[in-house]
Length: 442
Image (cartoon, rainbow, N blue to C red; front, side):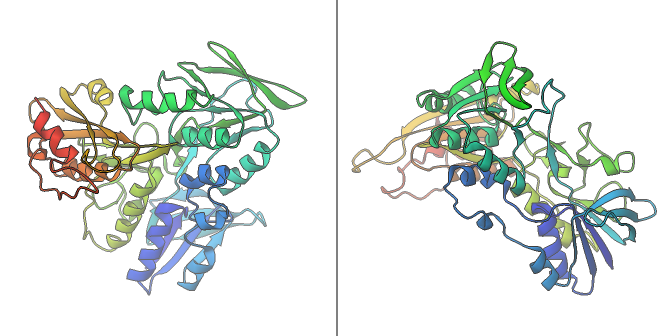
């Protein structure tokens, strides 16, 4: 069996390692246009902040390890064309400029995603950077050394984490986003309010509800960001606007969503036989809506990549879908979410209700305790849980992993009230905060 793999970040690495293990006689060739693999981009802000001192810790595999497994590892090779019907690919060696053709019995598409770069006047100016890979992170660190005023465009997780890192390093930081709240995709307002206050209390300027109209500069370097409502000094600009699937090669050959995300079935197979896909290049089954959605998360990528390998010869194990569970730490605040926010559910036309609980996470007789805020979103008629969010200074983020399982198994808010959770005064109360949400629901 001849297996070709396009791309080798999280999904690709998982697919390759498991394919090599399960099918030791397979001929596996991976094509990766970068000079490194398996970089944990979620660690960029930690690296920039200096919390992670050695960036090598953000890699969990290497071309050498793949080669040891017998994988033909072609780094700095870009796939130029893919004929899925004829099972052929055309590849360019980016070092020698030599072009070659290869064939496959099975193709694994793990080509990932790439940052969205809008066509804005002045975007070609120097010191306007992206934040996606290892090279980007090193450039950001180098450029930030001499930068006084840093502007981050995009208030998703990566943008927000970079803002914190820059502020902790003593920079004047502005965060710009067209939405009127930060992290609005993941959290409702009562939770984003907490995070926004943490930033403004530390002098971060939030320019929310503002679209970037142009960049201005001197001597070819950016000096100012002009938005729909103001202008901001900038020695360095980081674009964190979002990602889109890196799937141009396959358009018109396999089923995709409108944004180019490849649609896969529950066994990770595309609409073309013997062609599989995983990771940020894919649309994924989203349990809260029952539809394919684009949810680019490393956790989804490694699960999907692992399942590709298991299902490569015959369908064995179904993918259970995702809830898009995620978490973030902003200064002393531990925040996590799963499934749909109330805003997102209403925007999709779902009829939902919510219950919010504020309670000390453990008994008041303990030497210390502090308050946690939990919100659960559930369908009005079926009363099935579709989402939840939590924030607290004590780390209770694992609570969202529990709710993720509840959503996956279509549990109702009423059942949540009586789930069996342990009690120990060091950790919680006799009625767990999740129980309280179920008990307090209308």
